Image 1 (cartoon, one colour):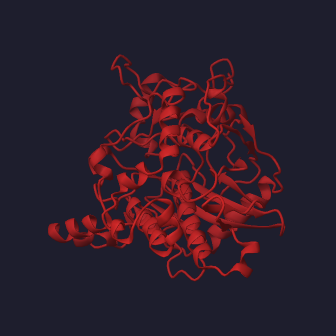
Image 2 (image 1 turned 30 degrees about the vertical axis):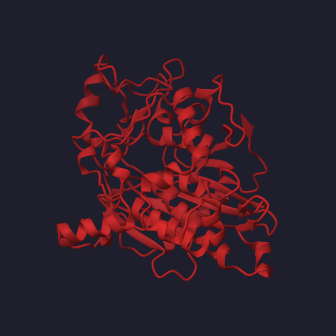
Image 3 (image 1 turned 60 degrees about the horizontal axis):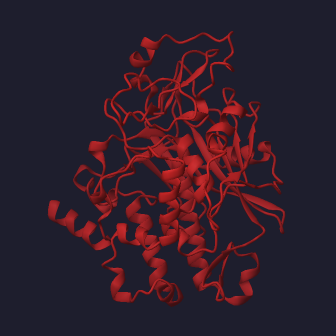
Length: 432
């Protein structure tokens, strides 16, 4: 495993940047009185300029069930804050890559990305590092304290209550019994052999899916997703084809009193130590993980509050008229019922919109089209699935990762990825 250090920002500095950015956002979409939410953010640090800024921020606690998955890529499957912040980060990266395509040579010294003709791809500025923050312990394995470590002074939760409070978890994957009670995860064990009667057993190191309102989801827990990003990078398959190396978080920071450093380390990387994963391009990381409970978020979860029904997604986009959006049930807030199945319902970080951003880059860059052996007329025919499959190294590493680490990682129906930008628009017009 590779160790990432050279961290110049404290947890307090990262938290203050994210909290201040959240306060600067419009009131719409934020929790009202007696509502709570989770905040996650990504901070960019420039070691050369000694400057830092928030580049992506999100709130959210929801996740949709499998019956609501969208074949056109309009609806967000997972609206937990950690996942939304990462998707907002992808939007920021696309924005920076588009700037790099059109940038003049003299402007490149402070750029996030620059084109390297020798490598035939974009290169991330070596002075730029990214730090992750969350105001709540990630759902799933990070919430679980092994029995030998459990604090006997905290009240134990009866097994029956796990079922009785399943919906009270509000799709967050966490259940808070009282202000002084132990935290348990509501994320469910993946019961593929159908032999497990209790899929809410608090078993350490196991893979889990997020809970839903009366219906199982296909979304993996935030602990599992953070662990995956810790190996493959946060950039995903599409961006992976365009840049020289994976993008990893230099540090992961948590500002919640229930977070346990040992449990976070186990969930993100220690549970896989000792297993082989040999790849020259993708390397399991040992990131700096920090907990500071002295920095409470003003809308942190409380037992006597209800979860906010909406989420917020913000990305650092210069000159953009819509740097932030509000999401409800996986869709952009304010869309009329008639347009719920149209591109107007799609958030800027949905599969549909991120595919659009990817294709926009290819339209603007003949170098990228040459690299991927594509012609302009090919772009309109590319499905989302085809674009992901073109990232050959990434997909091979992903398959190896599933074989060596994540054997029970869920798979979504393949037809959910078979849309093109044109087909998604056309199908909406037909349905309307």
